[in-house]
Image 1 (cartoon, rainbow, N blue to C red):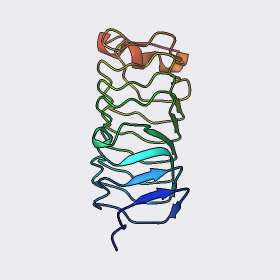
Image 2 (image 1 turned 180 degrees about the vertical axis):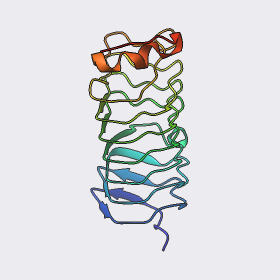
Image 3 (image 1 turned 120 degrees about the vertical axis):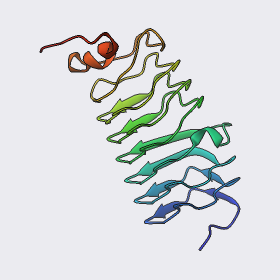
Image 4 (image 1 turned 180 degrees about the horizontal axis):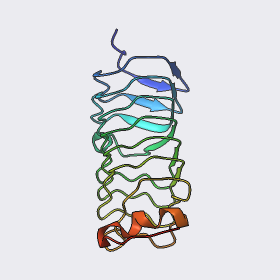
Length: 173
């Protein structure tokens, strides 16, 4: 059954299947999504303001089509493979224990965001603002410091290879 058009404030959605759903022009204020499937949902002008996603499957979502006014999200243990955050401003966002296989962060602003225990395999970072971002516990990222802004970002020694990958160096720890 389709979600009725409207403004959802303080709602909790549990085990909902929104895959391929048209969520265009919906407004979600301080809502929580737990164990939901939002894969390939249409997000044109969808507003997520202080929305939290836990244990959600969110494959192929295009966050760049969301309403960017007040956009604030948190992701915990989510699958965001093949998602796109192209040019999205998500400063100080928490990405916790989530997977971002081949996710596009090109030209996004992730200033002060935290990627805690995330898998960023083949995620794309190009002309991305990562200043003060924390990648300390994340893995499998490839971030080119020459084409991204990484001033004061945090990385672990084990993640050093992810910053130097294009130089084809052999790094031993």
